Image (cartoon, rainbow, N blue to C red; front, top):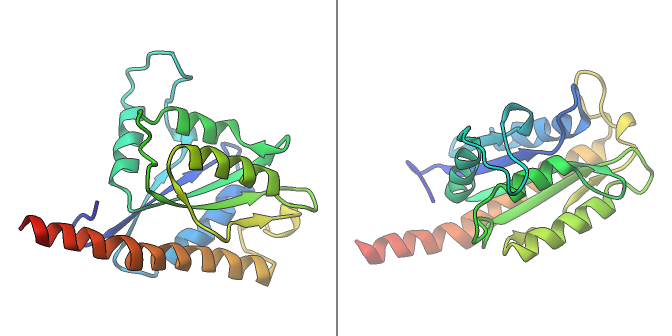
Amino acid sequence: MKVNGMIRIVTILGSVRQNNNSAKALAIVNAELNKNPNVKIIGINPAELNLSLPGIKNNSGDAKWVNEQIKAADGVIIVSPEYHGSYSSVIKLVLDNLNFPALMKEKPVALVGVASGQIGAVKSIEHLRSVLSHMGAMVMPGPVSIANVDKVFNENGDCLNDLVLKRLVNLSENLLRFIKRSLLPSISFEQLSRN
């Protein structure tokens, strides 16, 4: 899991639109993670990958790369817009390209959802939590659901809402805290035992 003492966090962006709000939320999360010199972020942006629908053969190597990144990750952060009451098809495509048994098993996963509506991305987060739990992931408490997202970020990606900003920062901190307290001690113990 750990490489050169680094904590590997894989982030998955759930939108392929230009200047999308999911990317703006993820940029804040990444900025917070980058404050820690022991964190390495590996970003999965489906817009830059050639992933296949289930059952369709694809020799691009992108699915293999995604699987390798998830397997090596200490934690995962998924940011998705809410489309028609659920998470994006882009997120589903990434998850469907993971090998079986699911590589998400026992991975801590933090969730961020963005939506234009007043109730935020509650339904997409619920659906995503259900799928990830089925895959064996440890979905972290305290997901961030951003309502009225068009009013939360400006064109430059600045967050105009202090509460949303605080919640995104806390999500990053909580995931790192969980990894350091819960996962890394057991990994270190396993390494000591083998040596």
